[in-house]
Image (tube, rainbow, N blue to C red; front, top):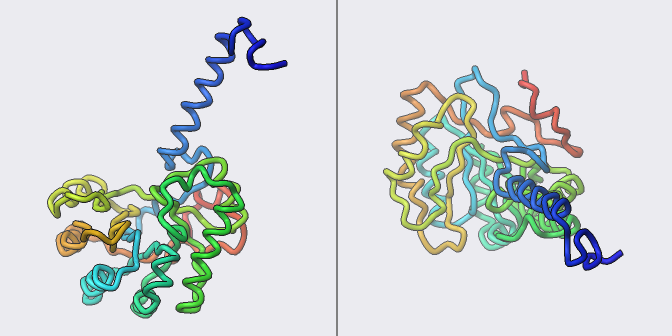
Length: 259
């Protein structure tokens, strides 16, 4: 039977169109709102009660802006997780070594910042994650198991690729939107104040996607540290909350409050 002969005789009938429309809406929600966990179990907040948050940084490394972030973190008690891009790691391996030497955690953000990542096939997703992992491992001897998809978007294809790669997907519960050009320090702080709470995973940027501007979150970091102190919070690397996976991750792992 062909589609032209289905339903009312000219294309899809009303029930089929309704079903297709519902499926399209469902799929779109899952792609653009990853915290719904429709396709991939994700870590989007940490355990509460420890007075801890996880500052995370995307889109690096960059020899200038990443080092600014490291210099601002250095005199504090705070540690962070850097989600790096494989192709930038290969360009700036010395910066990744500095991140690791300073006691911060490493994750991967893909091999390149592919805005169509959620539409890629599972084999390509797994291969690009592995390539980014290889770059980090060759640089500092650590093979990251944390993965934040570009733009945070996921799909059923992403889910299959992630399982093949054996990585854990990390989202966020607090966001400064500093990956957008034109954002100011005050804009970043206004976005973070309501959500910078116990257990928050905070997404910021230590580099711009195309390295063509300085993310405003960098200039906002001193004020972010002040907010953390005022609220009695400390930033820790993600591995302080959950061990990095050595095999595919199940949804139940994200519901346990680790000891």
